[in-house]
Amino acid sequence: MPATSDDFVSLSKTGSRKLPTPPQQKNHGNFIVSLGAMCAWLAPKAEALGVDLFPGFAAADLSYDDDGAVQGVIIGDMGVDREGKEKDNYVQGIEIRAPITVLGEGARGHLTKRAIKKYDLAADADPQTYGIGMKELWKLPAGRVKPGHIQHTIGWPLPSEIYGGSFVYHMDKDRVAVGFVCALDYKDPDFSPFEAFQQFKHHPMMRELLEGGEILSAGARAIVEGGYQSLPKVEMPGAILIGDSAGLLNVPKIKGTHQAMKSGMLAAEQIVESKSSQGFDARLRNSDIMAELKKVRNIRPGFHKGLWRGIITAGIETATAGKLPRTLSNHADYQQYRKRNGHRFDYEFVDRDLPPRDRLASVYFASTEHDENQPIHLKIVEPDVCFTRCEEEYGNPCTRFCPASVYEKVEDEGGKRIQVNAANCVHCKTCDIADPYQVIEWVTPEGGSGPNYINL
Ligand code: SF4
Picture 1 (cartoon, protein in one colour):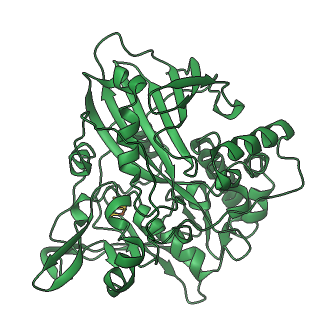
Picture 2: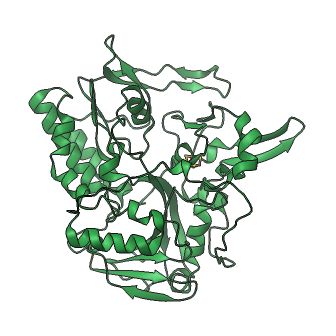
Picture 3: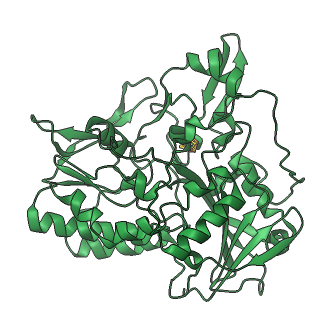
Protein backbone atom coordinates (compact mmCIF):
# COMPACT_ATOMS: atom_id res chain seq x y z
CA MET A 1 0.00 0.00 0.00
CA PRO A 2 1.34 3.49 -0.83
CA ALA A 3 2.74 5.52 2.08
CA THR A 4 0.58 8.64 2.38
CA SER A 5 1.84 10.69 5.35
CA ASP A 6 4.60 10.80 7.97
CA ASP A 7 4.81 11.99 11.56
CA PHE A 8 7.96 12.31 13.64
CA VAL A 9 7.21 12.66 17.33
CA SER A 10 9.29 13.21 20.46
CA LEU A 11 7.85 11.50 23.53
CA SER A 12 8.11 12.25 27.21
CA LYS A 13 6.56 9.88 29.75
CA THR A 14 3.09 11.34 29.31
CA GLY A 15 3.42 13.94 26.57
CA SER A 16 4.25 14.08 22.87
CA ARG A 17 5.52 16.78 20.53
CA LYS A 18 5.57 16.65 16.74
CA LEU A 19 8.95 17.55 15.23
CA PRO A 20 9.78 18.18 11.58
CA THR A 21 10.16 14.82 9.85
CA PRO A 22 13.84 14.21 8.95
CA PRO A 23 14.26 13.97 5.16
CA GLN A 24 15.49 10.37 5.45
CA GLN A 25 12.20 9.37 7.06
CA LYS A 26 9.88 10.96 4.55
CA ASN A 27 8.21 8.07 2.81
CA HIS A 28 6.36 9.75 -0.04
CA GLY A 29 6.69 7.42 -3.05
CA ASN A 30 7.38 4.38 -0.88
CA PHE A 31 5.12 1.42 -0.26
CA ILE A 32 4.29 -0.34 2.97
CA VAL A 33 4.74 -4.07 2.46
CA SER A 34 5.17 -7.10 4.66
CA LEU A 35 8.55 -8.60 3.77
CA GLY A 36 7.25 -12.01 4.87
CA ALA A 37 4.38 -11.71 2.41
CA MET A 38 6.65 -10.26 -0.29
CA CYS A 39 9.06 -13.20 -0.08
CA ALA A 40 6.15 -15.63 -0.35
CA TRP A 41 4.94 -13.70 -3.43
CA LEU A 42 8.41 -13.59 -4.95
CA ALA A 43 9.28 -17.28 -4.51
CA PRO A 44 7.06 -18.74 -7.27
CA LYS A 45 8.14 -15.95 -9.62
CA ALA A 46 11.80 -16.88 -9.06
CA GLU A 47 11.01 -20.55 -9.56
CA ALA A 48 9.19 -19.79 -12.81
CA LEU A 49 12.44 -18.21 -14.01
CA GLY A 50 14.33 -21.42 -13.24
CA VAL A 51 15.69 -20.64 -9.77
CA ASP A 52 15.90 -23.66 -7.46
CA LEU A 53 14.69 -22.81 -3.96
CA PHE A 54 15.35 -25.11 -1.01
CA PRO A 55 12.95 -24.00 1.73
CA GLY A 56 13.28 -26.08 4.87
CA PHE A 57 16.99 -26.72 4.34
CA ALA A 58 19.43 -24.63 6.32
CA ALA A 59 22.96 -23.90 5.13
CA ALA A 60 24.98 -24.94 8.17
CA ASP A 61 28.49 -24.32 6.92
CA LEU A 62 30.59 -23.17 4.00
CA SER A 63 32.34 -25.70 1.84
CA TYR A 64 35.90 -24.99 0.67
CA ASP A 65 37.95 -26.40 -2.18
CA ASP A 66 41.56 -27.60 -1.84
CA ASP A 67 42.87 -24.08 -2.39
CA GLY A 68 40.72 -22.68 0.43
CA ALA A 69 38.18 -20.97 -1.82
CA VAL A 70 34.45 -21.15 -1.04
CA GLN A 71 32.84 -23.71 -3.32
CA GLY A 72 29.31 -23.72 -1.89
CA VAL A 73 27.42 -24.53 1.29
CA ILE A 74 26.79 -27.62 3.37
CA ILE A 75 23.20 -28.29 4.42
CA GLY A 76 22.85 -29.32 8.06
CA ASP A 77 22.10 -32.96 8.89
CA MET A 78 18.45 -33.75 9.64
CA GLY A 79 17.31 -36.19 12.31
CA VAL A 80 20.01 -35.74 14.96
CA ASP A 81 19.02 -35.94 18.64
CA ARG A 82 19.95 -33.59 21.48
CA GLU A 83 23.08 -35.61 22.25
CA GLY A 84 24.19 -35.56 18.61
CA LYS A 85 23.16 -39.16 17.88
CA GLU A 86 21.40 -40.16 14.67
CA LYS A 87 17.62 -40.68 14.99
CA ASP A 88 15.52 -43.03 12.81
CA ASN A 89 14.82 -40.21 10.38
CA TYR A 90 18.49 -39.23 10.02
CA VAL A 91 19.46 -37.74 6.67
CA GLN A 92 22.96 -36.50 6.07
CA GLY A 93 23.15 -32.92 4.83
CA ILE A 94 24.19 -32.51 1.24
CA GLU A 95 26.69 -30.12 -0.21
CA ILE A 96 25.49 -27.59 -2.76
CA ARG A 97 28.26 -26.23 -4.94
CA ALA A 98 28.29 -23.08 -7.01
CA PRO A 99 30.92 -21.27 -9.07
CA ILE A 100 30.21 -18.16 -6.95
CA THR A 101 28.41 -18.31 -3.60
CA VAL A 102 26.43 -15.16 -2.75
CA LEU A 103 25.84 -14.75 0.97
CA GLY A 104 22.68 -12.79 1.74
CA GLU A 105 21.77 -14.03 5.22
CA GLY A 106 20.62 -10.81 6.84
CA ALA A 107 22.30 -9.17 9.83
CA ARG A 108 24.97 -11.27 11.60
CA GLY A 109 24.65 -14.24 9.29
CA HIS A 110 26.41 -17.23 10.81
CA LEU A 111 28.14 -18.19 7.53
CA THR A 112 29.09 -14.58 6.89
CA LYS A 113 30.57 -14.37 10.39
CA ARG A 114 32.78 -17.38 9.65
CA ALA A 115 33.78 -16.05 6.24
CA ILE A 116 34.69 -12.61 7.66
CA LYS A 117 36.89 -14.33 10.24
CA LYS A 118 38.50 -16.84 7.89
CA TYR A 119 39.42 -14.30 5.22
CA ASP A 120 39.96 -11.39 7.68
CA LEU A 121 37.49 -9.33 5.66
CA ALA A 122 36.91 -6.73 8.40
CA ALA A 123 40.62 -5.93 8.90
CA ASP A 124 40.30 -2.41 7.45
CA ALA A 125 36.79 -1.61 8.69
CA ASP A 126 35.40 -0.20 11.93
CA PRO A 127 33.71 -2.76 14.20
CA GLN A 128 30.20 -3.62 13.02
CA THR A 129 27.40 -2.25 15.21
CA TYR A 130 23.82 -3.46 15.56
CA GLY A 131 20.40 -2.79 16.99
CA ILE A 132 17.55 -5.10 17.89
CA GLY A 133 14.23 -4.48 16.20
CA MET A 134 11.02 -5.90 17.64
CA LYS A 135 7.73 -5.80 15.81
CA GLU A 136 4.10 -6.73 16.41
CA LEU A 137 1.25 -6.82 13.92
CA TRP A 138 -2.02 -5.70 15.53
CA LYS A 139 -5.63 -5.80 14.41
CA LEU A 140 -7.52 -2.82 15.81
CA PRO A 141 -11.19 -1.93 16.20
CA ALA A 142 -12.67 -0.66 12.92
CA GLY A 143 -12.09 2.98 12.03
CA ARG A 144 -8.96 3.57 14.10
CA VAL A 145 -6.32 2.88 11.45
CA LYS A 146 -5.29 5.52 8.87
CA PRO A 147 -4.02 3.32 6.00
CA GLY A 148 -0.73 4.59 4.56
CA HIS A 149 0.19 6.72 7.59
CA ILE A 150 3.66 6.21 9.11
CA GLN A 151 4.81 7.44 12.50
CA HIS A 152 8.26 7.42 14.07
CA THR A 153 9.06 8.39 17.64
CA ILE A 154 12.15 9.17 19.68
CA GLY A 155 12.48 9.69 23.43
CA TRP A 156 10.57 7.90 26.18
CA PRO A 157 10.93 5.17 27.32
CA LEU A 158 14.59 5.29 26.23
CA PRO A 159 16.99 7.48 28.17
CA SER A 160 19.06 9.88 26.06
CA GLU A 161 22.08 7.57 26.06
CA ILE A 162 20.29 4.68 24.31
CA TYR A 163 19.88 5.12 20.56
CA GLY A 164 16.56 3.97 19.25
CA GLY A 165 12.91 4.70 18.71
CA SER A 166 9.69 3.34 17.35
CA PHE A 167 7.81 2.95 14.09
CA VAL A 168 4.10 2.50 13.46
CA TYR A 169 2.87 1.58 9.99
CA HIS A 170 -0.88 1.92 9.39
CA MET A 171 -1.95 -0.82 6.99
CA ASP A 172 -5.13 -2.16 5.40
CA LYS A 173 -7.73 -4.41 7.08
CA ASP A 174 -7.56 -2.41 10.36
CA ARG A 175 -3.98 -3.53 10.96
CA VAL A 176 -0.96 -1.63 12.26
CA ALA A 177 2.62 -2.84 12.46
CA VAL A 178 4.13 -1.49 15.69
CA GLY A 179 7.86 -1.76 16.21
CA PHE A 180 10.71 -0.60 18.37
CA VAL A 181 14.45 -0.51 17.72
CA CYS A 182 17.19 -0.25 20.38
CA ALA A 183 20.87 -0.02 19.56
CA LEU A 184 22.84 -2.84 21.14
CA ASP A 185 25.59 -0.55 22.40
CA TYR A 186 23.55 0.36 25.49
CA LYS A 187 25.69 0.61 28.59
CA ASP A 188 23.39 -0.59 31.33
CA PRO A 189 23.54 -4.41 31.50
CA ASP A 190 20.21 -4.39 33.37
CA PHE A 191 18.39 -2.82 30.42
CA SER A 192 15.84 -4.98 28.59
CA PRO A 193 15.00 -3.98 24.99
CA PHE A 194 11.81 -6.06 25.11
CA GLU A 195 10.59 -4.23 28.21
CA ALA A 196 11.36 -0.87 26.57
CA PHE A 197 9.21 -1.88 23.59
CA GLN A 198 6.32 -2.89 25.82
CA GLN A 199 6.63 0.35 27.79
CA PHE A 200 6.46 2.37 24.57
CA LYS A 201 3.10 0.73 23.80
CA HIS A 202 1.79 2.12 27.11
CA HIS A 203 2.51 5.76 26.26
CA PRO A 204 -0.91 7.50 26.32
CA MET A 205 -0.67 8.14 22.56
CA MET A 206 -0.03 4.46 21.81
CA ARG A 207 -2.41 3.08 24.40
CA GLU A 208 -5.19 5.10 22.78
CA LEU A 209 -4.33 3.45 19.45
CA LEU A 210 -3.85 -0.14 20.64
CA GLU A 211 -6.34 -0.65 23.47
CA GLY A 212 -9.04 -3.12 22.47
CA GLY A 213 -6.93 -4.54 19.62
CA GLU A 214 -5.29 -7.95 19.34
CA ILE A 215 -1.84 -9.11 18.31
CA LEU A 216 -1.74 -11.19 15.13
CA SER A 217 1.99 -11.91 15.00
CA ALA A 218 5.25 -10.78 16.56
CA GLY A 219 8.96 -11.12 15.98
CA ALA A 220 12.43 -9.71 16.53
CA ARG A 221 15.58 -9.41 14.47
CA ALA A 222 18.98 -7.78 14.75
CA ILE A 223 19.53 -4.79 12.48
CA VAL A 224 22.94 -3.91 11.10
CA GLU A 225 23.79 -0.25 11.78
CA GLY A 226 27.51 0.22 11.03
CA GLY A 227 27.05 1.38 7.42
CA TYR A 228 29.86 2.95 5.39
CA GLN A 229 32.79 2.76 7.82
CA SER A 230 31.97 -0.78 9.00
CA LEU A 231 31.71 -2.31 5.55
CA PRO A 232 33.97 -5.37 5.41
CA LYS A 233 35.66 -6.42 2.20
CA VAL A 234 32.74 -7.97 0.33
CA GLU A 235 34.63 -10.44 -1.83
CA MET A 236 36.64 -13.52 -1.00
CA PRO A 237 37.77 -16.43 -3.14
CA GLY A 238 34.61 -18.03 -4.48
CA ALA A 239 32.05 -15.88 -2.63
CA ILE A 240 30.66 -12.40 -2.14
CA LEU A 241 28.54 -10.62 0.47
CA ILE A 242 25.37 -8.66 -0.28
CA GLY A 243 22.55 -6.94 1.65
CA ASP A 244 22.74 -7.00 5.42
CA SER A 245 25.41 -9.71 5.29
CA ALA A 246 27.62 -6.91 4.01
CA GLY A 247 25.94 -4.34 6.30
CA LEU A 248 24.26 -2.09 3.72
CA LEU A 249 21.27 -0.87 5.74
CA ASN A 250 20.75 2.90 5.75
CA VAL A 251 20.25 3.58 9.48
CA PRO A 252 18.64 7.05 9.42
CA LYS A 253 16.18 5.75 6.83
CA ILE A 254 15.75 2.53 8.91
CA LYS A 255 15.63 0.71 5.59
CA GLY A 256 17.85 -1.89 4.02
CA THR A 257 15.58 -3.67 1.58
CA HIS A 258 16.33 -1.33 -1.31
CA GLN A 259 20.07 -1.69 -0.64
CA ALA A 260 19.76 -5.48 -0.48
CA MET A 261 17.93 -5.58 -3.80
CA LYS A 262 20.42 -3.25 -5.49
CA SER A 263 23.40 -5.24 -4.18
CA GLY A 264 21.78 -8.45 -5.42
CA MET A 265 21.47 -6.90 -8.88
CA LEU A 266 25.10 -5.79 -8.70
CA ALA A 267 26.11 -9.32 -7.74
CA ALA A 268 24.21 -10.68 -10.75
CA GLU A 269 26.05 -8.25 -13.06
CA GLN A 270 29.36 -9.24 -11.49
CA ILE A 271 28.76 -12.94 -11.98
CA VAL A 272 27.47 -12.62 -15.55
CA GLU A 273 30.26 -10.28 -16.63
CA SER A 274 33.31 -11.71 -14.88
CA LYS A 275 32.28 -15.15 -13.56
CA SER A 276 34.49 -14.43 -10.57
CA SER A 277 34.16 -12.88 -7.12
CA GLN A 278 37.24 -10.78 -7.83
CA GLY A 279 36.36 -7.15 -8.41
CA PHE A 280 33.02 -7.21 -6.60
CA ASP A 281 34.37 -5.17 -3.69
CA ALA A 282 35.40 -2.33 -5.99
CA ARG A 283 32.13 -2.61 -7.91
CA LEU A 284 30.10 -2.22 -4.72
CA ARG A 285 32.25 0.60 -3.32
CA ASN A 286 31.84 2.55 -6.57
CA SER A 287 28.08 2.09 -6.66
CA ASP A 288 25.09 4.25 -5.65
CA ILE A 289 24.68 1.90 -2.71
CA MET A 290 27.86 3.13 -1.07
CA ALA A 291 27.25 6.75 -2.14
CA GLU A 292 23.97 6.58 -0.20
CA LEU A 293 25.73 5.19 2.89
CA LYS A 294 28.58 7.72 2.67
CA LYS A 295 26.16 10.65 2.91
CA VAL A 296 24.77 9.44 6.24
CA ARG A 297 27.90 7.81 7.68
CA ASN A 298 28.26 10.09 10.71
CA ILE A 299 24.64 10.04 11.82
CA ARG A 300 24.68 6.79 13.79
CA PRO A 301 28.02 7.35 15.63
CA GLY A 302 26.88 10.94 16.29
CA PHE A 303 24.49 9.44 18.85
CA HIS A 304 27.28 7.92 20.95
CA LYS A 305 27.14 11.02 23.15
CA GLY A 306 23.38 11.04 23.63
CA LEU A 307 20.15 11.86 21.82
CA TRP A 308 20.39 15.64 21.45
CA ARG A 309 24.03 15.72 20.32
CA GLY A 310 23.08 13.00 17.88
CA ILE A 311 20.23 15.08 16.51
CA ILE A 312 22.59 18.05 16.00
CA THR A 313 25.11 15.82 14.18
CA ALA A 314 22.30 14.38 12.06
CA GLY A 315 21.18 17.91 11.14
CA ILE A 316 24.72 18.90 10.08
CA GLU A 317 25.25 15.70 8.10
CA THR A 318 21.93 16.11 6.35
CA ALA A 319 22.53 19.78 5.53
CA THR A 320 26.00 19.04 4.12
CA ALA A 321 25.01 15.71 2.49
CA GLY A 322 27.89 14.07 4.37
CA LYS A 323 30.50 16.22 2.60
CA LEU A 324 32.40 17.26 5.74
CA PRO A 325 35.88 15.70 5.69
CA ARG A 326 35.44 13.59 8.81
CA THR A 327 34.24 10.10 9.49
CA LEU A 328 33.19 9.27 13.02
CA SER A 329 34.08 5.79 14.24
CA ASN A 330 31.77 2.93 15.15
CA HIS A 331 32.46 0.76 18.18
CA ALA A 332 31.79 -2.87 19.09
CA ASP A 333 28.48 -3.08 20.95
CA TYR A 334 29.46 -5.73 23.47
CA GLN A 335 32.39 -3.63 24.71
CA GLN A 336 30.15 -0.76 25.80
CA TYR A 337 28.57 -2.32 28.91
CA ARG A 338 29.33 -0.63 32.20
CA LYS A 339 30.08 -3.00 35.01
CA ARG A 340 27.32 -3.30 37.59
CA ASN A 341 28.76 -0.93 40.16
CA GLY A 342 25.62 0.28 41.83
CA HIS A 343 24.74 2.95 39.26
CA ARG A 344 21.18 2.35 38.04
CA PHE A 345 19.01 4.28 35.65
CA ASP A 346 15.54 5.43 36.48
CA TYR A 347 13.70 4.47 33.31
CA GLU A 348 10.39 5.95 34.53
CA PHE A 349 8.65 2.76 33.51
CA VAL A 350 4.91 2.38 34.09
CA ASP A 351 2.71 -0.58 35.04
CA ARG A 352 1.56 -2.30 31.89
CA ASP A 353 -1.43 -4.38 30.93
CA LEU A 354 -1.49 -4.54 27.12
CA PRO A 355 -0.54 -7.91 25.61
CA PRO A 356 1.76 -9.76 25.49
CA ARG A 357 2.13 -10.33 29.22
CA ASP A 358 5.81 -11.26 28.95
CA ARG A 359 8.46 -12.56 26.57
CA LEU A 360 7.13 -16.12 26.61
CA ALA A 361 3.67 -14.88 25.64
CA SER A 362 5.31 -12.94 22.80
CA VAL A 363 7.06 -16.07 21.51
CA TYR A 364 3.62 -17.59 20.93
CA PHE A 365 2.91 -14.86 18.35
CA ALA A 366 6.19 -15.62 16.53
CA SER A 367 4.89 -19.16 15.82
CA THR A 368 8.41 -20.43 16.46
CA GLU A 369 8.94 -24.17 16.21
CA HIS A 370 11.96 -26.33 16.96
CA ASP A 371 11.99 -30.05 17.51
CA GLU A 372 13.07 -30.20 21.17
CA ASN A 373 15.09 -33.36 20.48
CA GLN A 374 17.82 -31.77 18.36
CA PRO A 375 21.23 -30.35 19.27
CA ILE A 376 20.96 -26.98 21.03
CA HIS A 377 21.70 -24.36 18.40
CA LEU A 378 22.90 -21.76 20.92
CA LYS A 379 26.32 -22.76 22.13
CA ILE A 380 27.78 -21.21 25.26
CA VAL A 381 31.35 -22.04 24.36
CA GLU A 382 32.80 -21.10 27.77
CA PRO A 383 29.99 -21.78 30.26
CA ASP A 384 32.29 -21.19 33.24
CA VAL A 385 32.42 -17.48 32.39
CA CYS A 386 28.70 -17.15 33.20
CA PHE A 387 29.26 -17.56 36.93
CA THR A 388 32.96 -16.91 37.44
CA ARG A 389 32.72 -13.44 35.87
CA CYS A 390 29.53 -12.44 34.10
CA GLU A 391 27.13 -12.82 37.02
CA GLU A 392 29.12 -10.44 39.18
CA GLU A 393 30.32 -8.02 36.53
CA TYR A 394 27.18 -7.69 34.40
CA GLY A 395 24.46 -9.77 36.06
CA ASN A 396 24.10 -12.14 33.08
CA PRO A 397 22.57 -9.70 30.56
CA CYS A 398 21.64 -12.61 28.25
CA THR A 399 18.70 -13.23 30.59
CA ARG A 400 17.40 -9.74 29.66
CA PHE A 401 18.48 -8.91 26.10
CA CYS A 402 17.02 -12.06 24.57
CA PRO A 403 13.47 -11.15 23.47
CA ALA A 404 12.37 -14.78 23.77
CA SER A 405 13.53 -15.66 27.31
CA VAL A 406 15.85 -18.33 25.97
CA TYR A 407 18.49 -17.81 28.68
CA GLU A 408 17.40 -18.56 32.22
CA LYS A 409 19.47 -18.65 35.38
CA VAL A 410 18.73 -21.79 37.39
CA GLU A 411 20.19 -23.25 40.54
CA ASP A 412 19.80 -26.93 41.35
CA GLU A 413 21.78 -29.72 42.98
CA GLY A 414 24.43 -29.31 40.27
CA GLY A 415 24.91 -25.64 41.18
CA LYS A 416 24.15 -22.52 39.16
CA ARG A 417 23.86 -22.71 35.41
CA ILE A 418 22.35 -20.90 32.45
CA GLN A 419 19.51 -23.00 31.07
CA VAL A 420 19.16 -22.51 27.32
CA ASN A 421 15.51 -22.84 26.24
CA ALA A 422 16.53 -23.09 22.59
CA ALA A 423 13.05 -24.06 21.38
CA ASN A 424 11.87 -20.48 22.07
CA CYS A 425 14.52 -18.85 19.89
CA VAL A 426 13.19 -16.44 17.27
CA HIS A 427 16.57 -16.30 15.48
CA CYS A 428 17.13 -12.59 16.10
CA LYS A 429 20.93 -13.08 16.66
CA THR A 430 21.06 -10.59 19.53
CA CYS A 431 22.84 -13.01 21.87
CA ASP A 432 25.55 -13.70 19.29
CA ILE A 433 26.17 -9.93 19.12
CA ALA A 434 25.54 -8.57 22.62
CA ASP A 435 27.08 -11.13 24.96
CA PRO A 436 29.82 -9.20 26.82
CA TYR A 437 32.35 -12.04 26.58
CA GLN A 438 31.35 -13.22 23.08
CA VAL A 439 30.94 -16.77 24.34
CA ILE A 440 27.48 -17.34 22.82
CA GLU A 441 27.53 -18.74 19.32
CA TRP A 442 24.36 -19.04 17.25
CA VAL A 443 24.59 -22.02 14.88
CA THR A 444 21.87 -23.14 12.54
CA PRO A 445 19.24 -25.47 13.98
CA GLU A 446 17.70 -28.27 11.94
CA GLY A 447 16.32 -27.02 8.62
CA GLY A 448 12.79 -25.68 8.80
CA SER A 449 13.06 -24.79 12.50
CA GLY A 450 12.43 -21.27 13.70
CA PRO A 451 9.85 -18.52 13.68
CA ASN A 452 7.13 -18.30 11.07
CA TYR A 453 6.61 -14.59 10.48
CA ILE A 454 3.22 -14.43 8.84
CA ASN A 455 2.60 -11.01 7.28
CA LEU A 456 5.29 -9.46 9.46
FE1 SF4 B 1 17.59 -13.97 19.69
FE2 SF4 B 1 19.61 -15.36 20.77
FE3 SF4 B 1 17.28 -15.11 22.06
FE4 SF4 B 1 17.46 -16.64 19.86
S1 SF4 B 1 18.48 -16.99 21.81
S2 SF4 B 1 15.84 -15.17 20.34
S3 SF4 B 1 18.93 -15.49 18.65
S4 SF4 B 1 18.73 -13.48 21.58
